[in-house]
Amino acid sequence: MAPQPRGGAPFRRKRKPRRKVVVHDLPPHMPASVFWSAVSAWVRLPPSMPSTSDAQPVRAASESTATVVYAEYVPGKRSDRPTEHDTPSTAFLQFRHTDQLLAFAKAFQGHRFRDAQGHEYVALLDYALVQHAPTARPARPDALAGTIEQTPEFQAFAASLAAPAPAPASTAPTAASASAESNQPESTPLVDFLRTQEEQARTRRAKKPPKRAPDKKRPEAPEPRKPGLVAVPLAPGMLPATSAPPPKGRPRSGHARSSASRRAPPPRRGAPAP
Image 1 (cartoon, one colour):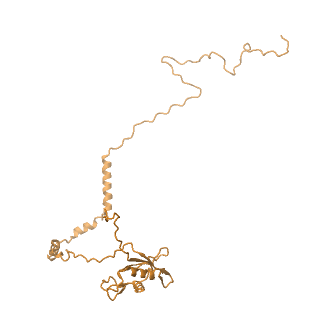
Image 2 (cartoon, rainbow, N blue to C red):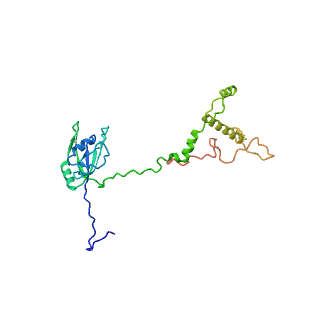
Image 3 (cartoon, one colour):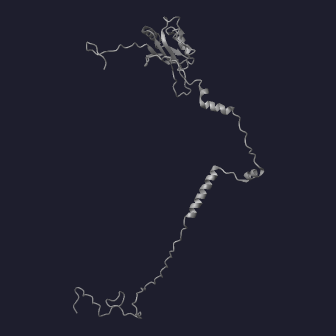
């Protein structure tokens, strides 16, 4: 919990003034020396500040006349494709005093740069998101630097190089072995793999019992029936009859009926009775 003063009002930390600015939208192909010469009237580095690159801002004559404590220029990049935008250059400046920052912003805000093709670039100033200036830390000394000769692995390697090499054994091939090797066909891993697959398939086929054909006889075709005749099975001991009597009942259609069975037609209306 933040400490509170005696009056009961919340404690407020004193805000540090912002003195670091970023210069946006600089020409992507502008060298650093051109930018530093353009801002030389407001940006001067202290003489004790170490140099990080060849192109640096103007050095002040003394520490009291220096205006910035940190200055960096990041060059942009021109795009080779017409569909892509160029990456503009950017500059970071951290001033010592606020009035020096305000004077630079008033004079350089909206400054126009024009290249050889006639393109104009308008500089835009803004406060940097990170107000802290990066500090150069000294590199830590490596504790293992220069100690490789004391390691046992390097000593064993140096001893193996100093030892005389053993004489190679006689491996001259004889004429018979050379001719036998030349007569053998050349084998490759793919050919060996195919041969192994073929041997395995042959072994599986030998172990598998042969298949037997099914002993199923096709049924004989029945004799064709004669039209108009129906075969009736007879009981044992009976003989077929030579002629069968005509069936009883009404005569079949088409046979001539007797005259007695025919009915007389009904009399006509108005005719005399017989």
